[in-house]
Every structure is written in structure tokens, then in C-alpha cells.
Image (tube, rainbow, N blue to C red; front, side):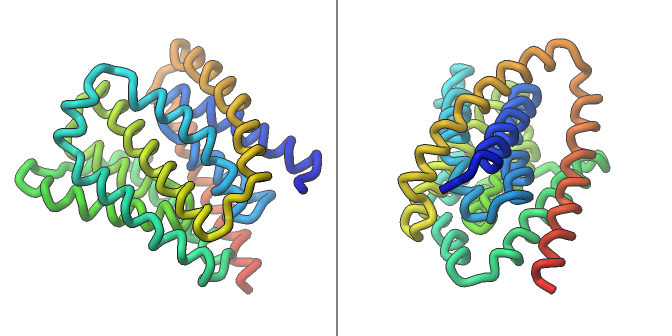
Length: 250
């Protein structure tokens, strides 16, 4: 049973994560996991993000009116991003949780560092057919192991040159199918219990509230400036998680 302190930490984490998603269209799993793993173990944190991630990303995936065109282009990527998540989730039962927590921190550092360095990858159309499934498989295995949907899926969708509105909707699709696959894999490995499912459902409220706040912030602040602050914070959080995990491993 989670105590009052843990419930408060969960609500705060999803409020902040929802705010980030409201501003830039992504980041709810990444930020919530980064915050939750400070107070909870990684499998529990992954189970808690299922409902807020699914609902907020389904909303994003079905908004924009470009669903058919996007699916026609990235269906191979999404297929692989759905069918291989169990490989990563199986690692939760066989590897030291501290090692997987360190991997999560390393992914956050990698993602933030690339964005802050201004790295922009480009994938030519001629290699997109095989690069999509490859990136999808890599992304979903890391999703199963860490609960993070970011690396390398988000970078792939950015690299194939989707227009802004198409990119936001495609991200919603990726995060939606990844959340469903993750939930099934966690349940299969007995990490997603009925109690955690109820707590995850309750966490939807602060996540939605955060999204509303984030959308208001987005209308007032420079997007470039906010991204700089955001990814600096993610970089610092990733470094803290790695250091914390290193202490546990040692």
C-alpha cells in the first residue's frame, strides 16, 4: 500500500510531467519516470504511468486529421514498436533494477544532450523503409526495460522530416501504441497489479491538469527558451538518477 508521502509524490510528478507535455507535446513518461524513480522502484513507476500516458497520448494521436497519411508512412515503425516490447519487459525479471534505473538516467542524459547540442538527424527517404522497423524495435525494447518512449523513436520521427503538425500527431501515435504494449508486457510479468492500476487512473487527473497549465504556458513563453530550460533540467535529472543508481549498485 502506498503511503501519503508516496501518493503526494506521484501526484506532483504527473502534474509537472503533464505541464511539460502541454508545452512541447511530449515528455510525460520521461519526466514522470525521472521524478518517480527518485522515490519509487522502476517497475512501480512504469506501471503508474500507463493510464495517464495512454489517455493523453490517444488525445494527441487522434487530433490533427492526418492519421491516415501518417500511418501509411510509418506503419512499419509502429508495428515493430508494438510487437517487441516484451523483450525489454522480460529484462525487468532478470536484471538488477538498479542497472535498469541507471539505463533510464543514461537515456535522459543522451536525449537532453543531443537536443541542447543542436544535433538534428536526417534520414533519407531511400533508407526509411528499413530504418523505421530497426528504430521501432530498438525503441520498444528500451521502452520495455525502462518505460521511456523517447530513444530512438522520437529522434527517428524528427529525422524523417515530418511537418510540425504531422510530427506532433505521429508522436502521439508512437506513445499510444508503446503505452498499450508496455501495459500488456508489465501485466504479463506481474508488475501491473490492480492496485497500481487504480493509482495510475487517479494520476490521470493531475496529468490532465498539468497539460492545461502547459498549454497556457506555451502561449506565453518562447518555445526555444522553454526547451532550453526543460532539457537542462532533464540532463540534471538524468545525471542524478545515474549517480543514485551507482550508489545502489556499489
